Length: 238
Image (cartoon, rainbow, N blue to C red; front, side, top):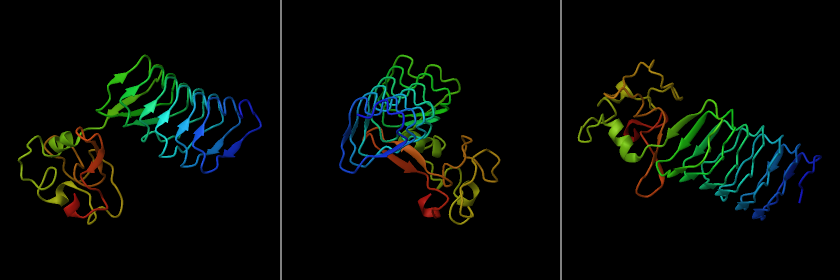
């Protein structure tokens, strides 16, 4: 449709459009901005392939599948939220500038999916993950893999491995010993770097109560939830 249109720099897709076909914007090398409506549920294969000026794209929540080679060779693409995506095709983000990939809803990472993403630093995976396929993270030079823990694992860590412990908070019955919350946080989160004036629990973990929520994966329902409370909450919610 717009493939190889080098003069195209930005475009807004009107509300009501549900799908972008295969190769729709392939090699639109100067396309830097695209606004997708919430009505989009499907983006075809190679749709944005080689859109080398594209730096960011907001994916609508209605979109859950990214097809093969969709953003391949979008070398400047660094900002994209994948947390709602349940399926990503092969080579979909190969050789892009993506820095963080939140893949919390994927059960499989397809072959060559993030191959050659040299700026990719953090990949967040779910305990639901079943397959990491051929070279899906090959040539990612400085990558850290993080897993979302389950709610059960969070409870174990927060309670020092003693689920029957009657301590009210993670590490103490006195919340001011272990947590940043609404009464002491000065309206902001605090670094969890071990330099805190607060105390860790017996596992040496800081901020399991208060400061920031911990995202947990529910192994039974397959859904996510937050635990631990945060700096904006009162003691009762930490």
